Image 1 (cartoon, helix red, strand yellow):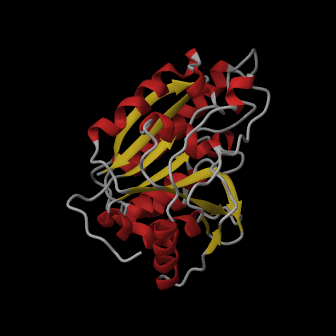
Image 2 (cartoon, rainbow, N blue to C red):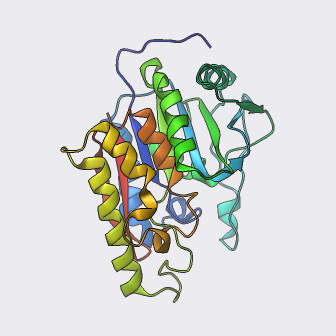
Length: 275
């Protein structure tokens, strides 16, 4: 689509999407997240469309959904039957998919269309709470199988112009994601999970919020995330952290605001917005 200028710059968000479909099932362990997701959109300008990068899709090249009505992918297991009947009938946007393709190409990056791929729970769980009317077009973009922080920061940088074209950029992951560490159904060590998640969360919050850091310093701190305390205890694999990298890159590493700062399944978890 041709570049469109909106009156207001759209925010970039990094949202925790919780455990599988639990936020949509009203699970009590997710009450704070449900409340936050249900009210966050009220404090932001309404986007013309949304680009979401989810922790649950990886490809060798950046790949974008391009169907006019992508289906949902129920990519979770062992939950109540109702969780496999969830509906979220927002439209797709081939026009936005094309614009993403063009921006990545201009930045020297490849991009692939996928007209068959649906939206995984990293897309429909948070967006159903953020925009329950399902009336805003959505495109999902994959992460890269490289799981390289540098690669994902560059993706965000290339896509930054979208924010001035009415597109909200949403990175959907979790600032803590260690399946063995989550305190749930009698599993996990509450003390070690809380300590590790607090230590790493403090590193990320300093990187994103400290007003004394320059954009270049913030970028470097994100690039060096493995040097943060308890980094690999919190992220044995980094796929749930990388959507934050895309959002931060799209915000040119400006100072973020922390808008979710709670405990989830025994871990300290944060969500951010760049206005």
